[in-house]
Amino acid sequence: MTFLPDGFDPRAEIIGALNLVLIDAPSGIARFLVGQDALFTDVNGLTWAGSSLIDSGPLEWSRDATAPASSMTLTYFQDPSEPDLIEELRASGDNVLQGRRIEFYVQPIGTEEEFYAPRFAPVLVATRTGGSLTFEAQGETIRRFTLAVEGPFRGRKARRSFYYTQPDHEALIGEDNPSLEFVPTDPRTDESLFG
Image 1: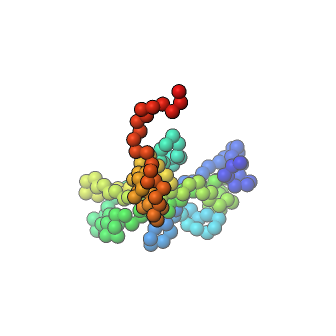
Image 2: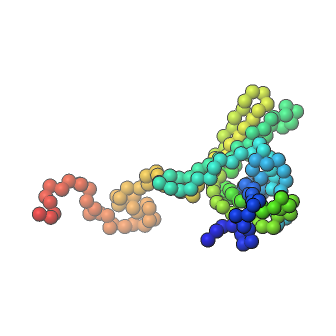
Image 3: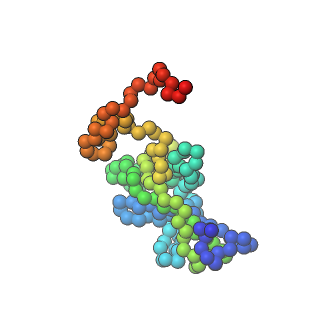
């Protein structure tokens, strides 16, 4: 089983793939072509705006009790005569993309002509959740902002805040439950149960 579309030969002499990222922003859907200075129109007629100034960290997968995370970064030169992009983002709130859906796609390319007239639709590789925005300024003109991208299991290593006491269990299930009234609270075993 493969996630590549039918008709795409991954063993062909010429193959390629474009990294595409979709961000479900409050102002609407934003589509990006990562690391390429171009506009790409897919088979559905959707345009993906590319820039070599956009960088996406590697996608991680959940293994060995880790919560996968990544980031997307835009580095650019701030024109002093133009409005400050970072100030505009801060005005809308640093958490404007927190909790928003971010989708990572791969666009299979089989021939050079498919850069201009693709045969295949982009393939969804992963869906993640937007995290916090961080900003950085270097000198007078170089600016960078980074969007943290969180995986689906970001809290799996943290302990739950509930303990197995009657009040905590009632808060967890939302109703009265006296079933934990006689739960053992002393872990000592003065007498062995078995011989």
